[in-house]
Length: 340
Image 1 (cartoon, one colour):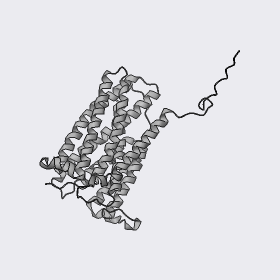
Image 2: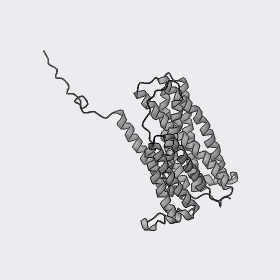
Image 3: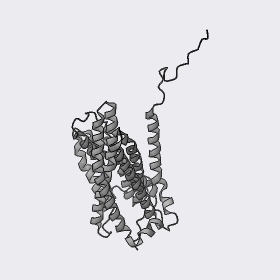
Image 4: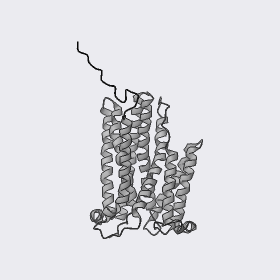
């Protein structure tokens, strides 16, 4: 009789866990974060090539800080928005993912502090602490707005860690207002109109990006807790309906803001001949891809046998939105086109 030797147990069977699906996802997230960081850091030089425009000192670092600030703003606003949607569902699972508002506030505080140090040195990258004139921040409009953002993120973090985390909406709103005012100085034509458009654009974009991220985290937590898949599908569907309105406002305000800076008569030329136009065109294409992914998710939500199959395109949507945030940070560090 032939004896068959048993196959040695695998590493996982001997008690050493092998790499699970979470490892691959973590690596993918880290790769996407690295890519998003490279866009603002390396983007100014390629965008400016051949345009005849000068690159401001430290524009790559400023673009990165601005992108980090936008992301730190979107995460807590999305938690507030999506968290309220989840709580409003009848029979929704009580389990909720651990909040990211406090870490986001810390990251936002660091980014705002870095941007404030640039303003304190006359919009130049400081070579050391001696170059930073903190007192000078109180003497200029940009300095006061930079200080407002630093303090607002600090207060938002304290509110998120307190017993009443919902109060963090007010300091976050202050950051949005400060960014809207900073983007349109008084020397600009109709600065209040421009600030109003930016206010709506940034608010809706933050709710869209941060809200989708939190919805996916809630669905993953509910799935792990064994909650009914119907509640997850209802949450995703409710978010999709609101997101459609947010996308409409983002598109309208984005078009109006672009036409204010690049008149319709010279729009096509400036989209290819200026750094701002090139990056704006890239952002438009990315947003179009995001809209296509959102439509795909909506179709799968309504027609697939398993409605939660819509999470697959929704995850891809979040990844592309992360790149959009990075491109938006780059856009703020480039010279505004000259009105022809």
